[in-house]
Image 1: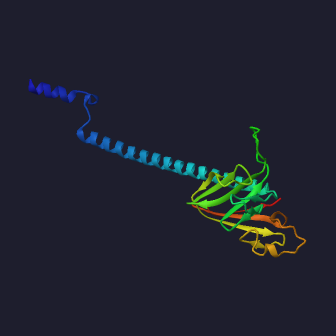
Image 2: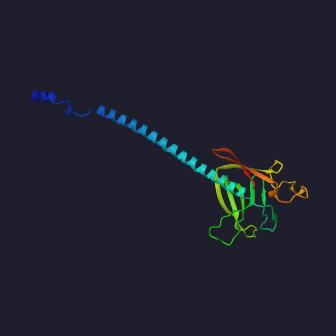
Image 3: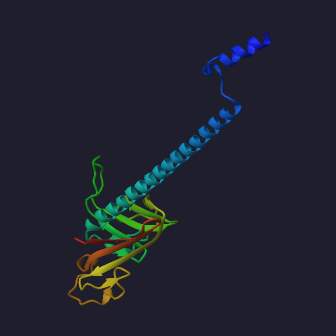
Length: 214
């Protein structure tokens, strides 16, 4: 009987037999290698997409910062102001690292009781480029600016001012501005021709823009 049972097992089709333990281990190892390769490829794609999104977001903020700068500078108007201490301030005054000016074209869709002129300022603080503005031109002692962060990761800002004789200045009005000829009107709008803005931004380097004064 045992001989007949063994003979029947030998005559059984091979398709009825299962995988051996070694074959299962080899299959699992192959599956594990494929899974690791697939995850590595997916992780690379996700990381590249995240970096692309970050660059796109920073580029959009960078473009918006230059748009704000261009609008304010190119709509500059000759209107001096008085600060919170009552001192007269030039229509545009600036140093190598900050700038304040009067601009026209302040939109008023809500038809509020206010001027269409606006006093704005730019400065760098803790690697953030800030735009500030005041609700009125001639400020009271308790007047506070409304600030808006335009761009992060800014290491440095440099401003230069071009006069009518094509000479660059790191301060406006220039130090010798009061010594000009008497027939020159004492306002910066008449002699200032352009402003150069240089931003040093992480991952983008030095970016230079030149804005014309109207």
